[in-house]
Image (cartoon, rainbow, N blue to C red; front, side):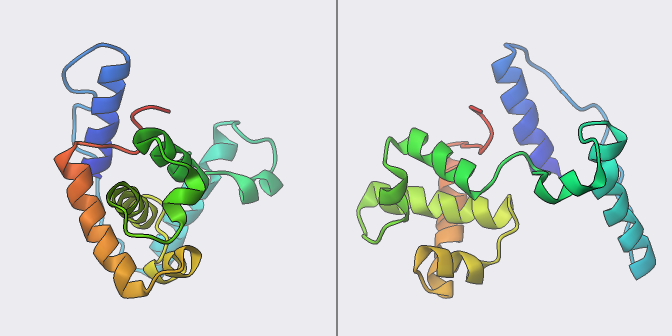
Length: 153
């Protein structure tokens, strides 16, 4: 949560030309050891768009993007960041910029979207171990360049 809130705060401050803390207090975290409590939390989170009147009916929850971005949006973001075609990024090859873009793609897809490395490996035509290495390299790239997924959307 700290990484998410910090990244959002940095992006918000940059966009609105402000500085300082955006979130004053630490988020509240409670360990959910019981399945019943976990199910209630999941229900609560998933019904928030209905409670906030973002959606009109329960059926619309199926297509609701909770994090606001998808694999396609990540790919579009990387295409803009690296000035590379989307198909080039996910294609085969070991060119330096392609590999860096694909590493970030793997890192964000696993950590932000919660995609499994196995699913991502199938989607990209890579081995699961290769995706694991790409995730680690992607994290180093993101940290080195202080590159956040949602800076420019």
